[in-house]
Amino acid sequence: SRFFIDGRGRGLVGGSECLIDHKPFRELDGITGHAVRALYLNCGATDLYMETGDKSLLETLERLWRSMARRRMYVTGGVGSRHVCESFGDDYELPNVRAYAETCAAVANVMWNWRMLLALGEARFADVMELAMYNGALSGISLDGRHYFYCNPLADRGRGRRQPWFSCACCPTNIVRMLASVPGYMYSTSGEGLWVHLYAESEAAIDVAGREVRVVQRTRYPWDGDVELTLELEGSLEFSLFARIPGWCDGAEVLVNGREVEAEAAPGSYFELRRVWRSGDRVEVRLPMAVRLVVSHPHVLCNACRAAITRGPIVYCLEQVDNPEFDVWDVALLSDEPLEAEYVPGLLGGVVVVRGWGVVVDREAWGDGLYLPLDRAPKAARRVRVTAIPYYAWANRVPGPMITWVMLARSALLC
Image 1 (cartoon, rainbow, N blue to C red):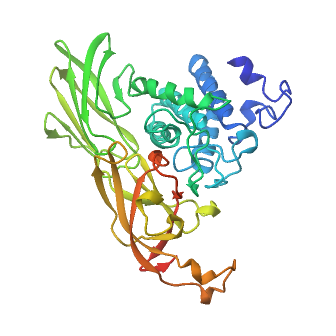
Image 2: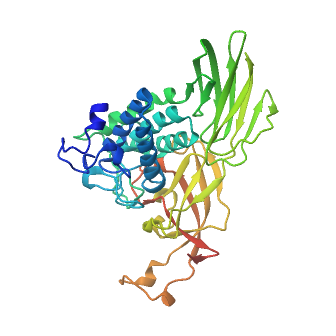
Image 3: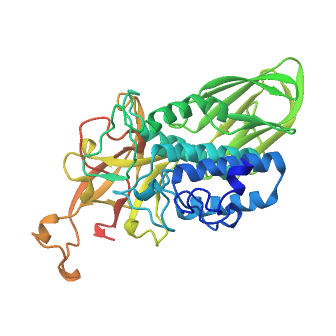
């Protein structure tokens, strides 16, 4: 790892920004270059920091993480906005229709954030890892597991379809590798105790301070935020259990053996439970999942006056098949109307859909023109019921338009 990191900026591979050879690694001021290779390089640099304690590497990695997560990452956790060099773009350059957002890059985002999580123990890394896993990466594989996306746009006119294979077949094998790795991302241990990073119906046997502790999770996450963890062990053992409280969650509660713990479960943190644990002890983590409208930084110009729908770790989109009465590119959400979540067991393998109200833009007002004076633009339109599905599940049925960033309206007036 040291050779490939310290060799950057010397022209060993041509000196290009695409190959991240345009300057020394420690002098990088922002995430750049081929998105997959950049994040793999960061994985190696994080591993090297863990082995050597080189603080200059950590400072660089923190700088690159902020550049990516705060200015160059899609709402799905996907990365890489340019088709040229399959690369990161400039700050806030996040086109939707032309998003590259390679499946491999989302997988690499999971891998790098896992390493940063192990290095620093901060929930922000687990949040991004989970976001990319459920959205930017999972969209890369069909529900039947036989078809794949190389690129993952956030808007489409119905042409995007997963393929059975590619001549460059990195994405199909990479998403399968990631899915097989998920059990290893759920927990970790430290000298303090046991860390719970991800929630899913599961059972695990974990070495904690030289003793085997079995953890049984019962939950319907990510559709429901109620999680029950039951510990099974011989005798008793004192350690801390750290339960992740996701950054999107307000009002979380933690209970031990039915009693609420009187301490703040702050969003974007790990809730520490220090005690002597015995077999049968039960921890309940209650994570309210409100439906939210998320807006972009104003410099993401293509998302101006638009919002994305999220619930828990899941990002949603509108797909034409669920909204047959209008073109999903023409609808504006009524943001002052309630959004309702409903679990539909027979849809797309069983998903929570989000329903709300919107108004449809009257395209006929433009005729065959491209622009209109503001005073002649339509101010109101037909009111319609809107249904959104998880983004990862789009393009599994009949082809049709899809959109993630939906126009906004208030009280039937377009924003």
